[in-house]
Length: 320
Image (cartoon, rainbow, N blue to C red; front, side, top):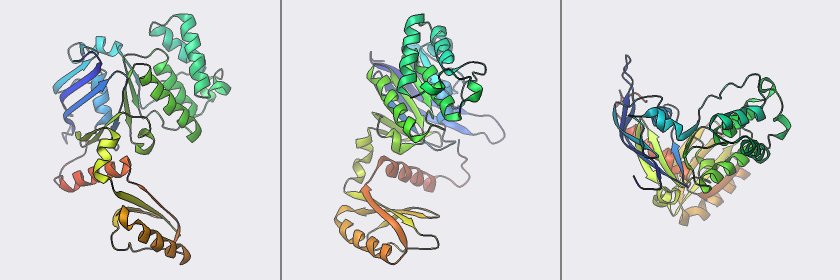
């Protein structure tokens, strides 16, 4: 394990032994370095939380190794856990406390000096725009404010590895931007950050590397630029349909997704002008409300990888 490597996972396997025998993780390799934000992307049930629980010593793997800041996390989970900070999917109950007191309490429990913890808590409260609720009892704050408080509790005295499991859940769009800035800042100040999320578009702005997880297997890993390289020269077409309308894509467009009032497809960049003319005609004919053409994104690659994996999977396979 190199000096800058905070987390090294090799060959990790975990099967839950119930009636259906779900294979939650199946041979996972993963690395997080100091100063990096590594995104772990996957739908619900892909095996992300099982992986996180093993990294921080809450669940023992069936096979494989986990080294966290030089500590064998399988043999010595308590020591490894002390080097990590984790924000779980569920918020830690802070009934009877205010956000400010909860943040400061965790900082002190993790060994921070009183005045330094108080200063750091104040910085986080300001950075996340928590000031109006900082001294309000937790029972009276919204789910989004509770989520931001949980993040601040996690990073007020961060470990070498910071694990964030869906940190933006319930957070409003304005404060989500502030939260992403603080996540990026954590890595810039030297922590290794493992970010578990299904919010691909927002995560793409702050991550250095990504791993796409499905059925407990890493389908692809690399930088955002590397993962999207295969889609260079391809544009994504998105249509917002008017109620009751249907459209048939013109030649050259490959359908990528469909919902009640939304269609998406991909088209070679050299055909974009003709697709724009077609889409404009659909607007005039009352079939679509608006359209857009954008470069292929990480979300497009993610959806394509998962769909390809599911097409290739045996019919009886059960997702972890």
